[in-house]
Length: 243
Length: 317
Image (cartoon, rainbow over all chains, first blue to last red; front, side, top):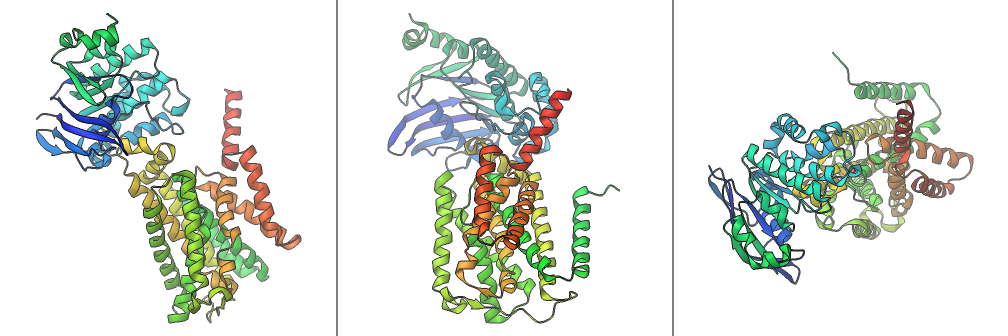
């Protein structure tokens, strides 16, 4: 009963600009895999390819949901969400003029999640008590940290098996980044999620990752079998650790 | 059993409307309320796409006129009864909304608005050159004989418009409170985010253009019998499109009752001004009110009331 994602030789871009040049990666059942790389290297584009927001020009993307292998290429975002793949988009992208509660309800748009809406709402409020206090507040009027909580909670409302998180640290104070990263780990353990996370912040991401990839100019430059391999990588040392 | 306040009001309004036709004997009242109700249906319809979904349609008069000319053409060709004409106008304009939506909804913001305006112009050119319905010169339409249980045909048209206005409002209210409405609100707020959450954005947008088109067509369908002379200038009138935008803006676009309030207010002012001052003043009134509301109360009357309540609540608490 595995839930995993396999990306093979994916090429994609916007108009005539090619962003991904043959990216391959896998996220195995129950793993937390981190995609490292600075801005503009294609992390978000890859996540958009997996969720159907960007159509790859070549390559294969398959997901295994409860052990059943499904081709994701050509599927609409709606169909992909229906499979149980949820996304926390970069920059949160909440519905600013709607309340916290309405944002969460919209996370449960797919029929399967709709049936469990009360149960999941209770769960996310237990995980983020702050959101329960502010359930009637407009999402756009909240602080960055709270908005990120809404974004993660909203993705969980779709009752996913696979969670894609695009740069959870963007625009957050360091203390909030580490809290958010810890929260993702906690949720992953409780819900048995398979997680793919795109992140620039190496030191934070490495805390919860099982393994990771370094993506540079739309290509996987390094695949670290465990966190130690990533820490010892020259590129990481150069870019992130300053040694 | 608890009776829904909304449906109770609907019942009261319909009974009051019917009593009105029996009690009032000056036909002027029916002519003037017909125009206000026609504006109300247009405003409610516009708001489904413009207010709930966030896509501004400048071509409302086009949909209205297609409803008008559906009646003219089918009445001339087959002499069909009014309910059939209403249905036909609804179906044809619904399909037109669906097609226009499919072709133009990939455009965003101002480009979508321009596309809708262009659609209305194309339709007007077609009608101008369609001899069967009178072309640019226009055509006379005879009111059907008999007026059902009413004293005259205008009373019948008034009652029909009242029923249609109530039905349009009920549809809009249903759409806003249902799962469809939640999805539309998500599209209005952030379309990409809506897509990320698995909201079927294209399908929902097409539902809203179809509903908008159908309601606008139905609003136009009885018009030929109301004015008895139809030409493209009156069917595609600028004031129809402008009112359809202004009424929801003045009332408040975010909720179903916003356009109803705006239509009753603006419609009443316009009709009063037409009688007491001049009919040429209509567009000026709309323009002035629109400017005032956009600068002073961008969320309309509903927004003003909500803000006032919030302030009061904050002071008390």
